[in-house]
Length: 268
Ligand code: ZN
Ligand code: MN
Image (tube, rainbow, N blue to C red; front, side, top):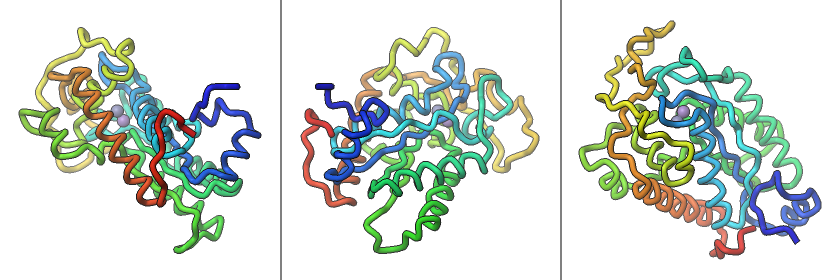
């Protein structure tokens, strides 16, 4: 007997079929990017974090985790440093919309009733929304249907109390958190072997104009590639962020879908 995994990719299809016939928990789809995150974090950071969060949430909601989206929409200068930076390898919007639409249709068509997209890359959000909306159109799903999809970015679950503890000198805003204290602390908690704080560059938060200019003016992105410095990052902040986000997101999903309490130890 295989350990009770929550990863769809690790389950055999018959076990999955039986799960989907009886389960009320959701299928969670983690979404990230392949994007430079400065000299101290790996380029897969956004998908690593959304997958870790989705996995813990699945264990608390009786859900499963689908294969993550490991590419994302183009990095934008004001939120990810810019798509011109080496390593950043992106999808155009039509591709991300199409991918989201296909995966959503495919899950709902095989009898999955509840899907949750857990986004970890700022620029993806509206294209995920569009792909989900087109998928529901494809399937003729309207208001009142028991099949539904939730979409969220995980940082929107960070509470005011947590923000006060993680950013004692004031919160700079999510858009410029790229490679900063949130992502670095979470990675130090979850994947410390992939973080090299000795290579981190300390600099003032980027000051970017209110407009987007295309093509970008590369010098407006700090040389590190980060939009704020990871100064003050530590694994304890990462654990606090992770535990609070997972707990509140799992509670939201249980409440929205009318699920009972799930024993995390038992998983799906
Ligand atoms: Zn990131
Ligand atoms: Mn990103």
